[in-house]
Length: 338
Image (cartoon, rainbow, N blue to C red):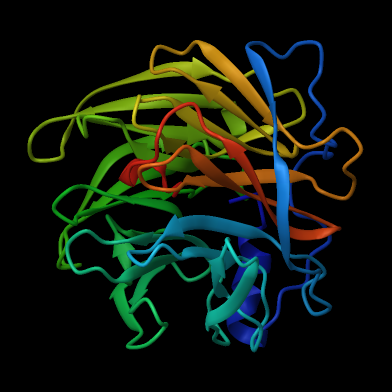
């Protein structure tokens, strides 16, 4: 999620609205590829506009694209005020969308379907909670709330292992400019928590690698992607910096992984996405058409299962949009970004 101050997000709980002066920490670019880009350039095509700037919050911010079992694409609008859709279901073939959920409280930054119970899980950045619901938005439950090792989370993105245990990128320390981010594991019952890594610089994107033997995580304020090797019980056995992202004014956002293990790194501050292979080679830059204006960030992507059709969430003063492009390999569970 693009850097919205915790104090601002927390105001949503008290007032039912967000008052924001901007959506990040850097000046935004237009998404046009520059001379420093490596690999090939992929130009995405506009599918549709999903949201416009909300009067109450001064912005809109799409996140968490994820495919449901019926083929519908679900997205969240982080800054939607009370009464406006905070979770939407998109029919990409018909280019229509409908509201799935709204409330007067949450600031949801990611969405994923659990392989264990089939429910849709959302991270509430402002309140440090994980909530779940049925695909139609019913039976809303609090899956996890409270402190982890004495500190409340700022959960940004989420990922499930094959058994339905949840892995959370906890972006603690962002507002203070301190490296206090964590990766937290929550068992599928929502009862046991473990801190797998700490001392991270604004933990943001999180995704399992192709084999489920490790996690890719991005650190927003250091523009780097790290890899956490995992054992059979989901515990970290090794950790290293895997890729240093030359983003310029842009910063590392959410991550998705395709069937070949390639990483799709979203950018905050530039409406573009960088694709790397699992060894850190830069394969491609996904960008918008050159004359596109008013779009500042390409936060996340989902690749339709079994296909190479990718849908990227893009936001800015012009609104919240879906763009599509041909991914380098087919979509799998890890291809639903955060």
